Image (cartoon, rainbow, N blue to C red):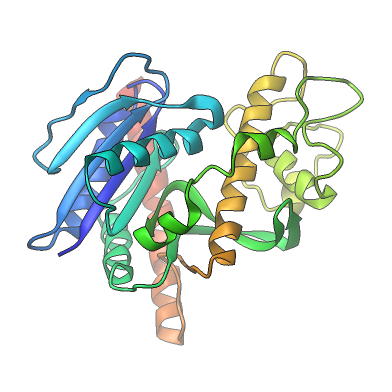
Length: 302
C-alpha cells in the first residue's frame, strides 16, 4: 500500500478544471488496491480560509489560501504543511501548478508513462526526484554549485524521504533576495554581480527580450520564451524579479536534491538501445500530442 500526496498550486481558479483532468488521470494510472490519495489545492490568489474539496478520486481533499512570497514554491510549502497537519507523511509527493493546463497538455499515454515510472520509483527507499529534465548547454555555476541539468517543476514528484531531507521546496526568501536586486536601476539588470554570468545569461535569455542579441535564444536552446517575456523596465521589473527567483528556486531544487543523495529520474530515461528508441518515440509522441491538445484547449477557451 502506497500513500500519495498531491499538492497543486494555482493563482485563481481559471485553469482548475483542466488541471484536475491531468491530476485525476495521473491518479488513475497510479492506483493500486489499498493505495491512498490526498489532494491539497493551494490558491495563491485566495485570502479566505480553506474549505473541503470533495472528489471521488481522492480520499482527502481541500482548498486553501497559499503563500505567494516565492510564488509556486512557497505555495507548495504551504500545501505540504497542510497535508502533514492532516496525517502522516505520504510515501510519494506529486507537485504541480496551473501551467500543467495553461502551457502543457497531457495525453493518456503520457499520463501512463509518467504514472508507471512514479509507481516504480515508489518502491525505492532512497531519496529520489522525478520529472522532465532540462539541461544547460554546459556545466553552469548556480549560486549553490555547478549543475548540468534540472527537473522542470510544472509537474514533478519526490518521495517522502527526500521531502523530509529538503525541509522546504523553497530555498528561502532571504537567500533569494540576496541574489536579485530589490528595485529597477538602468545601471543593472535582475541578478546581482555575485551570480555567475553564464547562469544569468541563460535565465535572462528566457525571461527578457533583448533585440540587441538576436542569437541569444538559439545559443541557449530556448525554442520559446516565457509567456510574459519583455524588455526589462521599471514597469515590469517586479514581475520579472519574482520570476527570476522562481528560476533560481527550480534549479536549486535539483541541486539540493543531488547534494542530499537523491536519484534524479525522467520519464524519458533509457539505459540500452531498445529503451533509447522507445523513449525517443515516446518523447516525440508526447510533444506532438501536446501541440494538438493545446490548440484544442485554446479553441475551447476562445
